[in-house]
Image (cartoon, rainbow, N blue to C red; front, side, top):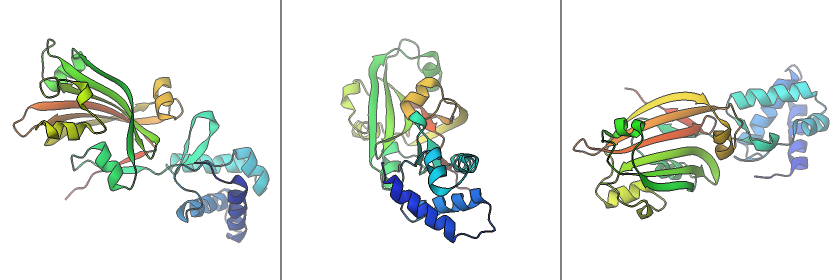
Length: 250
């Protein structure tokens, strides 16, 4: 989301001038950007001016500006994109206590879910898929690979594999895989998930519009029907600064 850089810089300058002079400059700049985000001057997806422009407009050193932005990126408030852009991020919270679809997660947080299809195919399962789904090598599976988006922003790359006996044709799936499975009486009732992290590859970076080496959260999920049959195996690579996972304990 493009903004009027001159207007934003003017507001940041006013906030810095009103701040406690005893605070370090990087803290005053951090507080000014925080306030701009909280008050809606900088919305989710808004692109910030470049470090040099911020430095020159606010009379701050490049080191101060770079340190402030780096800290906010580490905290998940900002994210670096391709082309050296820095924009405001807004992580989506995902509860691990409930079995919900990506679309449900987006809608519940006021975001428009979407996807960019990469591949839809029928094939034999890979060794990993055979083990996850408990099927032999001769079984056909339907495999979907797509970029999942919220308000048009890439959030995750998802590869979902379904045994063909539950879903014989990938063309049956529209916007929501789970709506299609529900219509075929094959909606998952419970799931087991395994989580791990790894840095983004060059391919990940291109698909998720992040920098290579940025942290990704990888979630492998096996989904079951009420009778115990495994209906789905999905591996999802989440952009680390776009998704937060929440676990509720009692």
